[in-house]
Length: 176
Image (tube, rainbow, N blue to C red; front, top):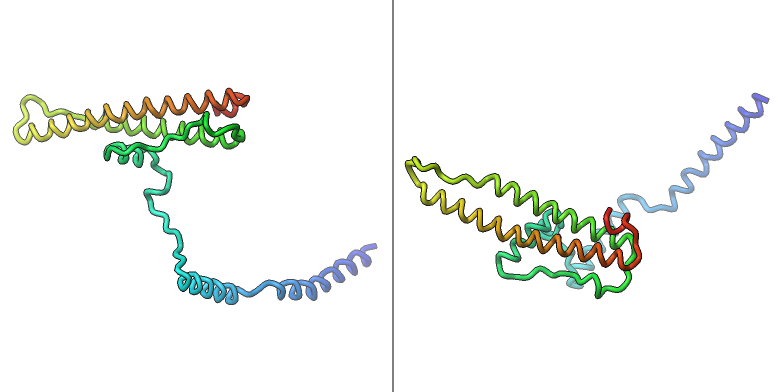
């Protein structure tokens, strides 16, 4: 019995030696793939196709800052109307609501951090007190604008959750 197992093991090992290299020859080598990529880039460049470049501003790591910059320039941030979209999938609503919750939490953290950094000069200040206090007042005004935006973001979150609830999804979707 042990001899039979040993024989089968050796037979399988020998077969893999012959089958392994044959199977690998079907796939192109790494050098061939690199040449194909260079040729593809050259033809794209000749046709005028440029690769899409993603900048830090396009990455949604800090979506609140992008919205704040847009609002400070007088631009309005696009607000998707949840009720106009029709019935969406549960995953769609859950991801949208989670992103909105993240945005609200991020904006709240920024408000808290900015609020904690406000320090007016004491009455016995010796130099540059007026300029210092003016910057602190500007920070207060910025906090007020951010609080208004926070209220808008919370309202948008509530609307999204309500729309998902009205579409028949449970709390695991609209309140993850």
